[in-house]
Image (cartoon, rainbow, N blue to C red; front, top):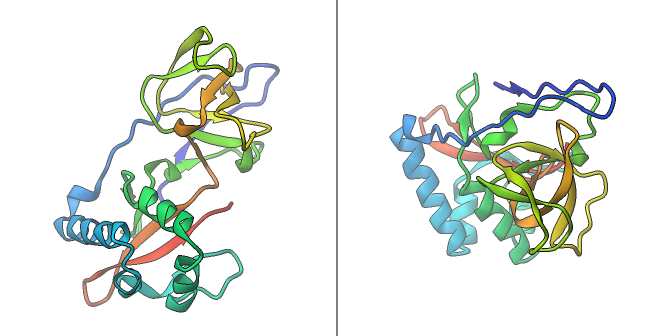
Length: 207
């Protein structure tokens, strides 16, 4: 898999120079992929279980340690709307081709985190010009505007709208949770079969 290296050097209070990773969607390199993704996304929005399963690989990878396959996918889809929403959100993201020709979403999955950073603490700022605030309030003074960067959250607070973040240069502040995508969050991969048809072959979260 092609990966973009995030250069984090742990050296005192400042971790590293900040880097941005603007979203680039490579799907338009293959019109057949665009058509497949549009159709699958429409099926997901319609909550059409049979159509989604028909688009999946026979050995679709869905969990670390699970059996995978269409029946496991059916079980996950039956768990409720949260799983459907995660699938819909992931398939709506820009993606990239890896060096084996697989297409992965979201695009930030190609960022390689350093071994010294716990992946569970890494989040991607999914928007442009997202306000970094001085306190966990919508009217708190702005410290800056952040676009498409990796930030670190050592203690994510599930009930809080604003999360305490640290930028890779050591700057600290608060950002709204709506713009923070966990680097261990869901990602999906499309693979073209021997017959030349695209299939959903991975939808998984975790390290």
